[in-house]
Image (cartoon, rainbow, N blue to C red; front, side, top):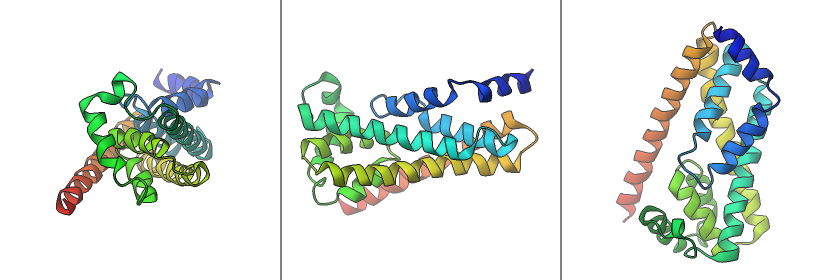
Length: 197
């Protein structure tokens, strides 16, 4: 039954449109599990050979860039304080921190923020509000999105390949590994920020 269910998920024509929508939505709603979905599909590909890894990476990367550019456009068009969600304490604090450095360290912020949910929103909004040139920003977002998609897919795929005969176990283990790695990166980032301050 599990194999039939997985087969139906893999064969669904909605798989990649749903992944794309999830990743785009995660640019605004950090509760959406886009990283988890990418890791899980990578694990499934590593364990069963399907869905195609290249398609998972491409869909995740394009979704990431589309979400970033939409957020950038909002920042450029309406600024960083117009809507209530932009004034929420965590989002507002992240935007304030980013605004001061976005012009000087755009590349570092775009690449780093791709892995930190609230920071990603803040960087994208602040980059638009600061009117960072769209061409430069789009190239940075594309490179960061591809790196993010490759990283999450690779984590899932490696675990999936190692536990190949049990796809559900591979998905669970790969998601746990990705969460642990994410928490480690987040802790390292916070420590580095504290030391700089």
